[in-house]
Every structure is written in C-alpha cells, then in structure tokens.
Length: 127
View 1 (cartoon, rainbow, N blue to C red):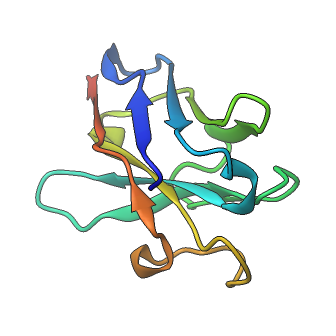
View 2: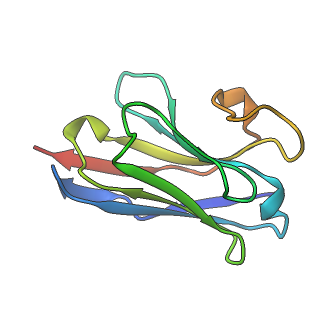
C-alpha cells in the first residue's frame, strides 16, 4: 500500500515562497507520475502541476506557470513543489497524488487518474 505524506505548508505573505515536499512510502516510486492538486475553499480540486516518472516532463496549470516548479528525487522517493511569488489566490489545501503506475495519458490532469493521495497540507497566503 502506497502512503504519501506532505509537508511544508504554512502561512506566508504575498510575494513569498514555500516548498512543499511529499514522501512516498513504497519502493516503487519511479513507476508513478506524480501530481500536486489544490483545493481552495468553495472550489473544486484542480491539478496545479505534474511530473513524469523520470522527471523529464512537467505540466503546469496556467494559473501557476512561471511561479511554481515541480520536481522529484527518485533516490529519495520524494516529489517537491517550489512555489514562488505566491498570491492570496494560491491559498488552498495542497494534495500530493500518485498517478497510474503503467501507461495512462500525459499529462494526467483528472483526479480519477490518480490512485493514491496524501492527507493534504494547508497553504495560506496573506495579502
């Protein structure tokens, strides 16, 4: 059973930065594309960024492009989300998720394409 544990959320002022981390418990980390979703109050959960199994391909939602960077360290079974130039509208609960272990489309943008989810970490950006 895969477990994903996020860390790194918190309160930051607009314009600031945060780095989220997600540790993957199983030794099969490299077979999963990974994604960071977010859900703001009263809104649907949306994919913010995704990274392919090798780390060679990335995807970003238009709302975060140029400000967020997703990366993965396969030796440490960890995926990261570096968030810069944060805005109040980035306030949300951020979830790490593991995509289909084999095959699937790229990028996997829909929630149902992800098999495992972390518990979420709160990011609050004050104006």
